Structure formats: C-alpha cells, structure tokens
Length: 190
Image (cartoon, rainbow, N blue to C red):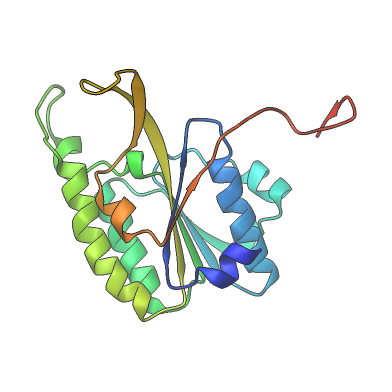
C-alpha cells in the first residue's frame, strides 16, 4: 500500500463520521506493512478493536502489539516509546476522541475540564514530531467528526474533529473518509 511507503516518519490523520471505514483503512495499512515484514502496533483507546475483523482484513494478530490504555497520557506515552524505539513500522491510535486525560477520568461528572484534551494532544505532538523525524514509523491517528452549529455567516452546520487544532497542524496528510454506500458486485454485497 502506497501509504506505508510514502508516509514513513510522518503523522497521518484519518477522520470522518462513525462507521465510515476509518479503522478498516488503518487495519489495511497494518496488513500491508506486515506483508512487507513490518511490525505494527494498535493503540485501542476506544477498547473496541474486533480481532476477527482484523484477521479478515489480513492483519496477523499474532504478530502485532495491541494496547488498550487507561487514559490519554498512557496512550501517548506508549506511542512515544514505540516511535523512539525504532522497532515499529506503523502505530495506529484509535481514536483521538477516546484519548481522555487522566484528570478528567479522575474528576467528577459535570466538572469543567476546558481544553485538557487539546493541550494533551498539542504537547504530545510536539514531542512525537521530533521522535518521528528520527524514525521511519508511520503514525496514524483515527479521529471522529462532530457537528457544530455556525453562529455567523450563512449558518447551517459544519464539522470539527476532536482534540483541538494541533493534529491538523502536525499531520502531513489528513484523509477525510466517508461512506457513500455498500460495495456490490452485481446485486451481491461484498
């Protein structure tokens, strides 16, 4: 897959609405890297990876690292360690929206935690960008979109991604993934 070869040492964001194929695309990148002898890691912050789906896509689940961290800091620290080690070819973080800061997890429901996740992402990406420049690791962040209502201009709704603006700035490529329908061969759904 072209993505694995071209974007080594880079940050790539895959974003879009739910059930649009973001994780599926990331798993295809992992499968392709593994076919080329690469070692990969999947940081499952959502705690939702289906190993059976990964196998169907072609991922060798016996030969990749799967981590389900407790908080955003733990996830991003692991990503930095993996990138700095130079032993991992692809790291996928699923998803930015699930990278909840420890302070927020430890707080009470209803507590105000203004921009904690955005600050966490900004700090992590500053550090990770340096580590990535020294490695050949492809770092894929999966992100979700949220609808917002514009209060100026022509009105209507627009979409924003989770985690603040740092990921937009640090990403070499941002892939907007959308579902337009089912893939069919004749009348058969593939």
